[in-house]
Length: 179
Image (cartoon, rainbow, N blue to C red; front, side, top):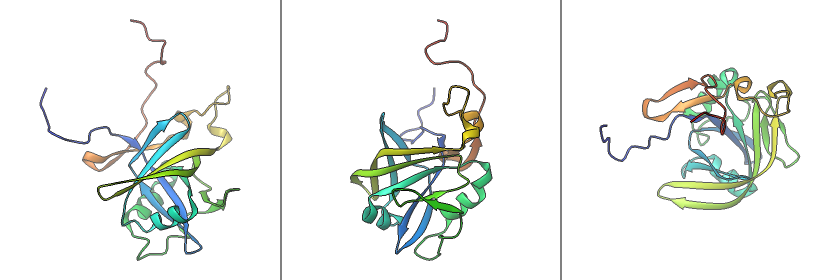
């Protein structure tokens, strides 16, 4: 086995677009640094210069819109241009949730959360969110009413190679594999 040194190699990760109201308009950005903190909390990590950070800090809420192939082109666009230079408010069709955040209509799954803490580390704002609502298109549920990620078909991001990937096949059931 070859030692590659201190490489961030926990990829691929699901791609998401987050939204927030900035100066009374929705803004969007693509995020590849997200994680699970606990059973009811997630982390969204954004470089401090992001335009959208201001809106997140002001409102204390944000949606995590999962990206599928249908919205990938628009998602890639909002991740490649700065809200400081370009108005991204009309890139996606959206609705405003009961909590006042913009939610992308075409996202197959959206987690809405409230910011419970912000950890600043190096040049990043790390937002810890308590999950408040999860929206999913009903066609993406299985017979038991649970999310079927094969149907959701999230786009995955391979950071070391800067590539978008698709989800593979099911290879087994957790806690049911033979020894």
